[in-house]
Amino acid sequence: MPHNPQIRIPATYMRGGTSKGVFFRLQDLPEAAQVPGEARDRLLLRVIGSPDPYQKHTDGMGGATSSTSKTVILAPPTVPDHDVDYLFGQVSIDTPFVDWSGNCGNLTAAVGAFAIHGGFVPAERIPENGTCTVRIWQANIRKSIIAHVPITNGEVQETGDFELDGVTFPAAEIEIEFMDPADGEGAMFPTGNVVDALDVPGIGVLKATLINAGIPTIFVRAGDIGYEGTELQDAINSDPDALKRFETIRAHGAVRMGLIKDVSEAAGRQHTPKVAFVAEPLDYVASSGKTIHASDIDVLVRAMSMGKLHHAMMGTAAVAIATAAAVPGTLVNLAAGGGPRNHVTFGHPSGTLRVGAEAGQLDGQWTATKAIMSRSARILMEGWVRVPE
Image 1: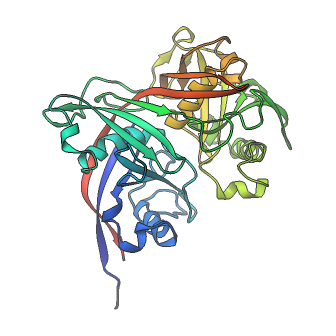
Image 2: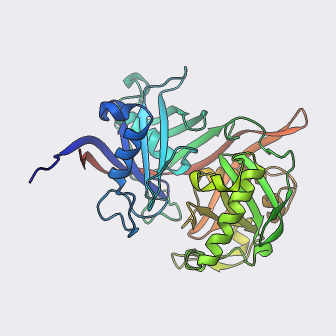
Image 3: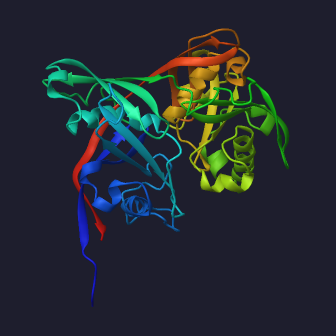
């Protein structure tokens, strides 16, 4: 019986923050997949194991969640004064679709480390002991990111005592700076307002903060949609009606932000924008069983990713949270107590996270210079990934 043999492609499986994905160097991909298009998308879908109607990714490297169905391609820099180009592909689980519309902030920590492992950073820039600054060009959104990667004995340090809620084991801390984090071109607040009235059919008029920072994000108040802000994954993800309501909010918010022209286009842009709901601090028990006290956080935030409630918080959404918190009058800022602030600690389903941002007004419009957060990264496996030819 005739058959097509498998091909093998050099790849590295990495965790970055609360996500993990399959990392490639552009030059290691099959020639047809070295350029954007159908061949590349088909390859990455098969690597992850999508589309999978069973939603298990049994026959691929994916983990059947938005946090674990990710791919990264690194290439020599196309922009001066950078070390590497970083291209992120969010792979749909049950449809034949790779979304290239945004960044993954969590995996950015792994990008800095992989850039060193992969030979993109000149050897003379890597200290014997200390910190290596990796200058990343995020090719999806055309922004600069700086990763500060710890080095011990000339190699990336992966183990350490830095704990990140949503990740089981401690590791070495990697500080990430998202420079000029307003996503893509245009204003940080695309409507010109820090709070809008968003008319959503079947739900009503919601107050919403629509922001482009880190990743386009729609913030609404938890109480306005029937929640407290302390919900864990199962409370949302086991409720099909709730998921439909969030997708309706997302689609209408995307139109209002100018990301799509009609709500029918939202299905073809699954990765962006995100929807998040915020509330003033309350005590709750995180998914790990740890009690989070209201006194330990400034604000509660829950965020949707690829149609499901995220188990912790997307890195890019954390940037959006930090930036929105820094602007007086946004829903995030008000839920956090209002007033000027350059950092915020928020509660998410897995625990807490502290993030910072610097924002100010220029010519009457709000802008952000950078957002900062810490993550960790670790190589889980390296070698070759095999796919049917």
